[in-house]
Image (tube, rainbow, N blue to C red; front, side, top):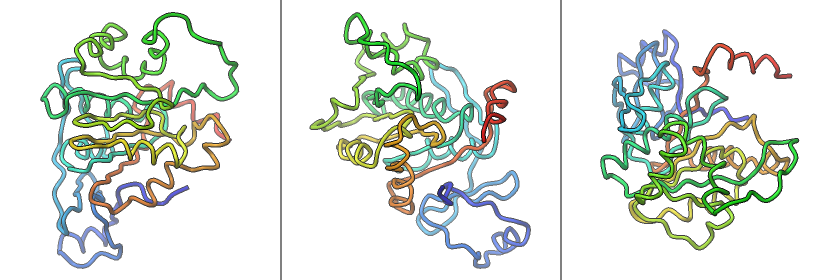
Length: 267
C-alpha cells in the first residue's frame, strides 16, 4: 500500500492557507495535484497551475468528458503535463485504460507521435487453465492481448486498420529486449502484472521523442511473483517528484451500477 496518489485534498483550513498564499503543512512535489472541493491545481516548476475542465476528442472514439474530479486530473495529466512517463491506477471501471487509449489516439491523430506501441505481458487471469497455442497468424495470436484498446477504436477492424497504416505496433513483452523505440507512445495496460525488472526494461526502451504510458490495478495481480515484486509501488515510490514522471490514482467506478457491485466481493 502506498500513500502517494498523485494528489492531495485540502480541508477548509488548508484551503484558506492555500488561497492566502500561506505555507501549507504538506510539502508538495513536482507534478502533484491539489484538490479543493471541485477546484484543482497542479504544482509545476515551483508554482501552481489551475486545472481547467478538459475533454479528449479523436476520430475513433469521439468526445470523452471527465466524470469526476480525479478523472479531471488524469485528463489534465495526459494533455498538459510534459512528463514522459505517465501512470494511471485504479480499480475496474474507473476509466484508466479508456483515458490512456483515447489520449493516445488523439496524439497520433495530431501527429505528435508516429505510432502507438502496445505492450502487455501475456499473462492469463489467475486460476484459469491454459488454452494452448492459439491458431492462426501472428496477428491472430496477439489480438486477445490488445482487445482493451479495441474497445475504444472500433473493435478488431479498427485495430487492424491502425496496424495496416503503421499507427499501431503490438509487441509481446518477451520480445522487447534490445528495442530502441523513438517518436512513439509505448502503452502498457494491466501493468500490475509487471515486475520491477519488467518496468525497468520498459523505461529503458524509451528513446528520443517517445513516452511511456501505463495503467494498473494492483488488486488484480495474476501471479504471486508480481505481488512479491511490487513493481508499480516501486515505480511510484522511486519516481515521484521527478519532472519526467506524473501519476493519478482513480477511485470512482464509472462503468455501470452493476460493475460497482464487484467491490462487494472483496474480503
